[in-house]
Image (tube, rainbow over all chains, first blue to last red; front, top):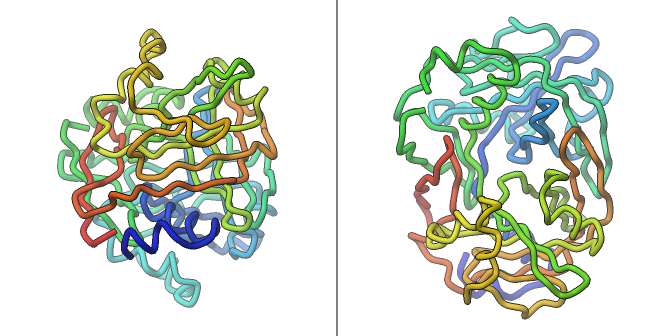
Length: 176
Length: 176
């Protein structure tokens, strides 16, 4: 992609190009259906919402399979991936690899309703208190019910970051 | 901050600690009031919302001065900072430096209603189509009306990223 292609094109093209320029942490968004099965996908559209009460939001495409699960269960879980999860990312980003998402030994059922990614930097389990549709997406507003923090925080461990259509490295310059 | 303090404490403390672990791009969120004056602040709570229509969201504390301006004008502008804006960040993060925010030569009025940060990686100007309150914040849903992309994209230019309470460096590993 060159500067020329970025600067020409219609609004939709320029908007898509602009999204490649922003760096965002990658979360595995997961939920549990009424049969106890787990569903999830990688998202960069999660963010903190409010400190009081502790809350997170996530914008989810209504075509994503996890959307219906969250809408029904009213619960979701956000697992902040680290750069040590790089090899796992593809299966949560491509729908044809969906069957591989929860077959590994990287998940725990230690929290009720919430699939927990082992070695995540942190995990938020959330109760959906509001959901607002816009365009192709729904924004879920989740009150945080539990926070799990990694017991293995150290210099050299950083969040997995998505930038320009690829994983990127980030340098933590002071102790976490 | 040690792992011990991260793992103990109440939910609110653990939630605040968890937010330090996520990396996010820093945007200057700005708006213009009815007298033509500009207001703005640095945020990490902005995210893409939907591709169709192109749209962005921003979670804004209702105590922030820009909140009332956006609520009245129904417009906001998100300027994605680069690591070359590092020296500017403090004035947009500390309320007692508010008077210094728009006095520099870093802003342009080239778009109507929207203060545009010069040399931003990209700028989105948005029309507020919905606003939802939750806790201390309002989430503004903005339909993107214009996208300005930097004409100076190159390897070595990256977004300004906030991680662990500080600016962080990010490596762009392929051409933008």
